[in-house]
Amino acid sequence: MIFLNAVLSQQLAPDKLPAAVRSALGKPLRRAATLTQLALVGALACLPKERHHLPTALLWQSTSGPRLETLSLLEEICHGSAEPMPYDFLATQPAIAAAQIQPFLPGLQSATHFPLDSEGEANWSLLLTLASNWLNEGRYAQVLCAHLNSWAESADGHWLALATAPLENAPANLHIRTMNYTDALPDTPDFPAALARWLAQPANRLLHLQSSATPRLAVEFAQI
Image 1 (cartoon, rainbow, N blue to C red):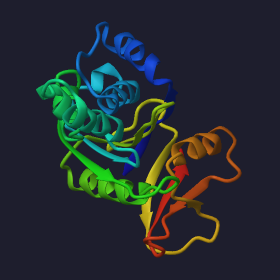
Image 2: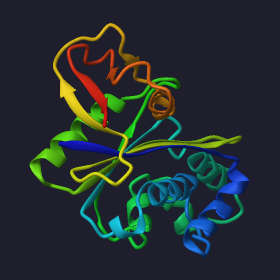
Image 3: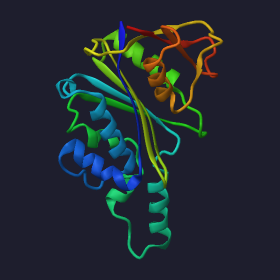
């Protein structure tokens, strides 16, 4: 059985993010891109310290991607007085986030980034289905699924933590269903916020998530 162990939504002003990192780590994370900082703060908030060593996968999607860092790098290349520094280039590479997170989350064994085309759209259904398959196969003890965006005015992170063993306060378990639900919630970036509201005041014991891309596949959450 797959358990939902954490539901988290974070919204921070970009200038407040370094302070959030210092609060989580007890020290700053130097030369880290905004998405990396956001990923680190969210991952550590989702997992209690005693689970940091467990085999972990991170699946994260993003609409913004490292857009701001890429624009800054291009500006420096085209109009700067000197060549960009290596860490300016690394900040434009989403894959670098895993390497910078791993020292603080030693159980992290893999991380996959899924870029998105349009604002307001997401693919939580894909992330959760893949996470469920991996957990059922025994590849990992836990999987973090996230939607991270870094804009000029805000840094947003939405998180779901899944595992094969429940935490004491695990609110729900998860199943993949091969059918269509007319009352399913849409697959949007802030789905975890909607899920948190349902958990706080459930209209019924079951909630379904369905993507328009996979109309015959649904993710079912059942309250424990």
